[in-house]
Structures are given as structure tokens and as C-alpha cells.
Length: 321
Image (cartoon, rainbow, N blue to C red; front, side, top):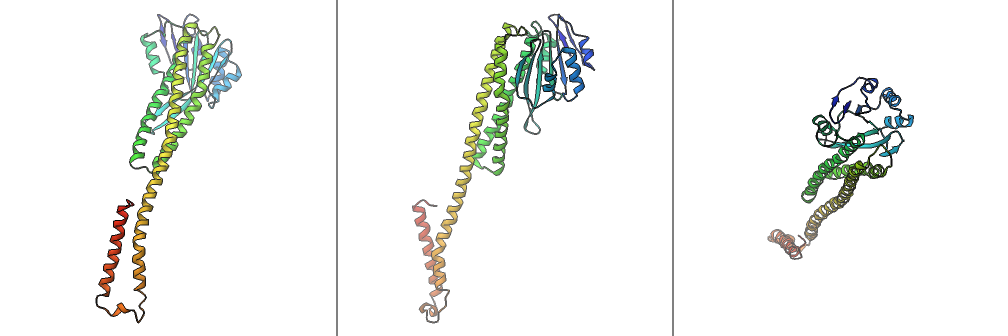
């Protein structure tokens, strides 16, 4: 729990909702951040203390929600997807963030501990920027903005991975490269599902006529909307790049196979006349004239070698090898 105004700041880890509500003061803004949404009794306590609708509490506990925004007069309910990049496993983790904006409070629910709000907490502690001078709506904006800005960091990591794959495609593509491309395509599809409805959420917040959102905050929400459009454009660009890379991989594998088949075909073609000559002199008929000649064996070998050299020279002039 964090409670603040222009002159005062309090930060405390509380054991239950009742303890948090005891610090509530209409003249200051309270931010209540709750880690873990699978304990129904905590969500019920929050619902009773802050007058939340039962369906809102149900949506908070259901972590598969699509990003959305509901204006319920006394408060605004927003659902977002927060993304974080796991450096050890080299993959993107996601969790649902539910934000409730009231007249003097903001409640954020997240599935696990750890988030992208640390710099907001530092700004509150050190009284940097406008955040402690403005109301709860500005705090809600900063939370949403932090989530959206973190998308750019995820896209930067994915962009670096895509560049590495492009280099591998040109030099030596393998089956692991194909698997990586498919994994990235799945991540892009997931990103698109997370970001696409977010544009509508931010747009509704910006155009909302709720008294909970000041007109001065709408300017900042418009900036978040622009960032959302940039994220969507980057996701679509990466999706097109991955589709093109998949085509390049298939073309590279096909070209490599064609090269192998060409070499094998050239070798087989060279040995066809040699096999023909060897087959004739391997019949050993009694009256074959060359069988009794002393020079027959070396002459046939020289003939076969000459045929092979002539064919190799011919193939080189045709640029087949």
C-alpha cells in the first residue's frame, strides 16, 4: 500500500484489506497493489471494502481476460496484459493486470510478484515529476504507460533475435532455425492478441466522460494511444518479416537439396557410359576379339578415363558443375 499527496508519503506492506482501508484518506491518493489473484477471499474483501460489483471480482480472478475497460460510474475497471522477458529461458512471460480507478484510490491486481512499476514507486518515494501533485487518474495513467512502454523492450529483444536468425538463414539454416521461427511467430500472434484490443481500451479511456478522469490526463492518455499504435505497427512488421524468413528458409533448404541432387546427377551421368563399357567387357564371350590381346585391359581403362574427363570438361563448359 502506498498513500501520498503533495507533501506526505507513506509506504507499507499490509496483512489484510481492512488494515489498508484504515489508512484511506479522501485528501490523499492510495495505491493498493495486490500480488496473487487466486485467493478469492482477498478479492471478496476488496470488493466489499471498495464497493466492487461481483462480476468485476469474477473478472479479476479469471486470468484469461481480453484487455477491456468498463466504466461503472463510481470506478473504472481496466484489464491489461503485462509482458516480461525471461532472460534465462529466453522467452516472454505474460500475466493479467487488473486496475481499478476510483476518485481517491487505485487498486492493481497481478498474478505473481514482480512487475514493471518499480520506477513509478521510485518517483513516488523521491517526489519526482508530477505524479504526487496530481490525482488517482494520473497514477492509473502511469501504470498503463509503464505496461505499454515495456512492450517496446520486449519487441527490442525479439527484434535482436530476428536479426540473428536472418544471419543464420543466409549462412547455414538448420531445423532448429525453423523451430525458432515458428516460436517467434507464435509469440507475435500472442502479442497481437494482447495489443490489438488495448488500442480500443486506451481510446475509450481518452474519450471517457467520467468525472474520475480529468481533461488534463486525457492528453497523456493520447500519448499512450500513440505508443500503442507504434507497438501494433512493430508487431505487424515483425510478423511480415517472420513470414518472409520462413519462405527464405524453405527456399534455402530447397536450393541446398537441388545442389546435392545436381552433384549426384553429374556423378551418375559420368558413370553411365563407364558402366556400359564395363558391362560389355564383363560378358566374357569366348570369341570376343579383345580378350586375347595384351593391351586390352589398359586400353579399356584409358578409354573409360578419357570418356569421364571429356564429360567433366563438357559439364564445366556448360557450368553445370
